[in-house]
Length: 163
Image 1 (cartoon, rainbow, N blue to C red):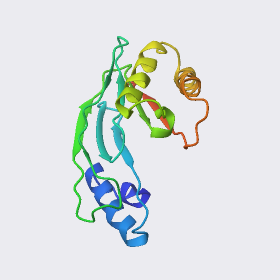
Image 2 (image 1 turned 30 degrees about the vertical axis):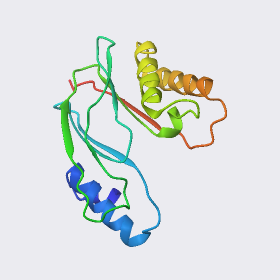
Image 3 (image 1 turned 90 degrees about the horizontal axis):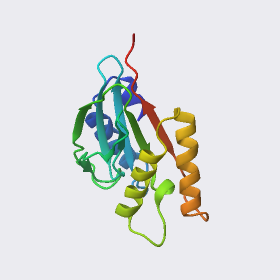
Image 4 (image 1 turned 45 degrees about the horizontal axis):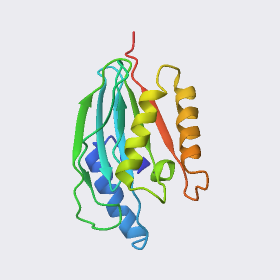
């Protein structure tokens, strides 16, 4: 993936190229991916998903939403798969959250409820810095399901336009 990004490809092409390479190298393994290309001057984010959970957005006023970003299949399923690219413009002070299912999944609930719970935590914990927000989201996740076996990844970015 890094090579496709470094070559300057659009997110949809990064996902498609990574998918083809993944299938050539190890056709047995599958992977999910959410790749966001952020342009700090404009606040524009281009996002592509491959079998991955939807990103979340906290707006400057504290409201949060699950982004309706269409996605393609998991990487490694279909060498000819297409991965639709979505574009949005962030308002200054917005926080974009990307995460893995290991952060939110619980055995006693469905994935939609798990995403909604994370969205609620993102709204409730806003107001501090990103470090505090990340710590709070991880704390909430561990409290909701203390016996996690899956890996956890969380990426937060706040849009602050250049001066």
